Amino acid sequence: MKTPSSLQKDDFEALSEFRYQLRRFIRFSEDAAQSEGLTPLQYLLMLHIKGFPGRDWASISELAERLQSQHHGVVALVTRCEKAGLVTRTQDDKDKRLVQVRLTAIGEQYLHRLAELHRNELHSLSSVFQVSHISAFNDRD
Image (cartoon, rainbow, N blue to C red; front, top):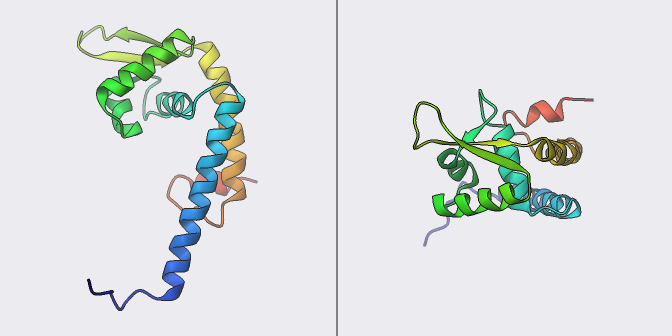
């Protein structure tokens, strides 16, 4: 396999640093969720429900896409979160095949605490993470 001549040592250093900082952020996120008694996936599920564009709920399929998971795995995760009192699910009034997943008041409380921690951590990494939409967090004082 031929090595592309356009890549320089500093390209590898930049990629390495980005991956290192990304992994640090993910580790921070995992630890933060676990400190609240949640799994990292429970936190991510709640974040993707609250952060779904344009509405206060998300479907199982939409959550599967956001989590990059299989549909049946997300159904199991939603079931666990429902039993923990973090989310509710209801059938859509118009399309009975569609399940709407929403946060409960308890889920909202957990999510707000964790999101605050994550926003602060992102702010501390603003020199590393310059991705669209994330920069909105980086620009805050």
